[in-house]
Image 1 (cartoon, helix red, strand yellow):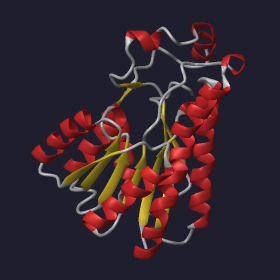
Image 2 (tube, one colour):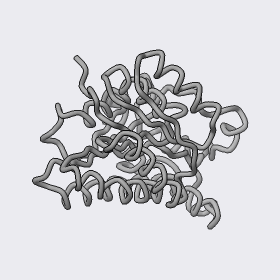
Image 3 (spheres, helix red, strand yellow):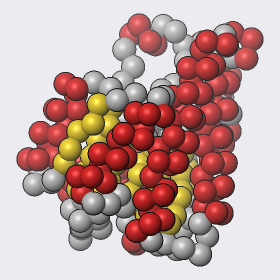
Image 4 (cartoon, helix red, strand yellow):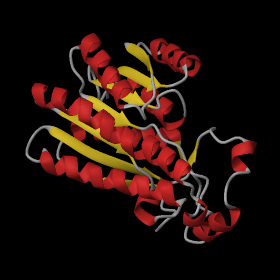
Length: 253
């Protein structure tokens, strides 16, 4: 069954990881997909996969930390397809378990801009179009760190804010066909972190947070996360709004 037939979706951070897998799942379910990221080469690679699946798609290069780029991305989607049914705010990055005492002003600002402010910018640009057309579904990517605080201080704070923003938007549009939900992934099997980035992790604090998870439980896959996102984007979840759904295979129970 195709859950998203003819739905127009914009996915930020759509060139890799959960974002790229979400684009593939959306394409398989009949959506028209726009993917938004900084790097042209990876965007084109994912777009070729989507077209091979028979999907109508477009690529948009830009920086989600810049409100003008987010505005332009939404405008391009609406101009090309006439509407925007689904917004997936997936773009983001981890903070290497950087603790409060080690978090510089510059690093904090960068993490908040990418993981939190970008969500505001894209929601703010998309909602007038959804209101005009009378429907829409926003799916924001938070994280288990936004629930439990078990990552670095900037990432945990930003992802907690995403949950609060999600609930705030859902409350504003309660009783309409505009919905907003969050997905809170735990560790997910994606090829994103190289050896250099691993070396930046605060191993002492990582060990502390790891004690509060069951590390014997396997990681969820990117496809697992994408399937939940697709469900929340679809009309099958039409009675669900304002929810933050933890998708961690039960590692934090």
